[in-house]
Length: 112
Length: 120
Image (cartoon, rainbow over all chains, first blue to last red; front, top):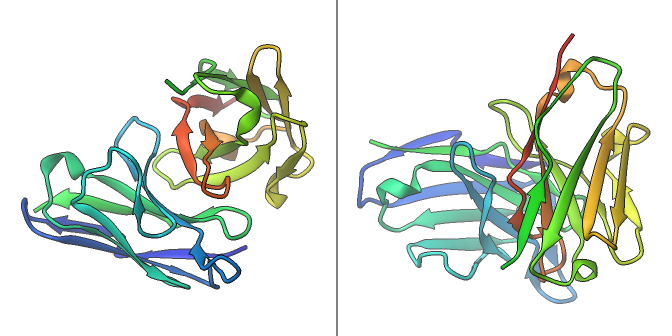
């Protein structure tokens, strides 16, 4: 299975500041035939199921605020929140589906 | 609107089996895969397997092979997860999630989760 490793495990950022979460896969998740990274990002708030934020590494799901952006290709990816809002406090997960789906361990984002 | 509604919480003894349901609505049931993902208390997300509601084909994560069965009922737009030989480590919230249109492994809608507690 592809191992997904996120960093950091937790992050505290001031309101209005930028937050960046990294995700590294143990092998590529870029499907060369269509140049697509099978990498998604989810946000999970306490007591709720995860919510899809980003798919194909950099495409925002409908309705997701544009302060959320994804980048990267191959094995190295990032999720950036450009200006942290109070409602963004959550745990964030990356996930690959190039092969059997696997998730990163999660990054807990808090307000400093 | 798309909804996945799961059955209620369960308490089971070690060695027993549990069956969780996930009823889909708001879209054509046979058009999207359904995945099952679980989350132990305070832990991360773990993929368990996938079922194709159209033909019923399924694939399970290796670590659950032999203990998990996923089925579907097209007449009620419901998928089921059955996990047998339960042990305390199976205590978790079990989620069904719909495979999206971007390859099928992006989970665009989730059920509310079903807490399964395994305790003697």
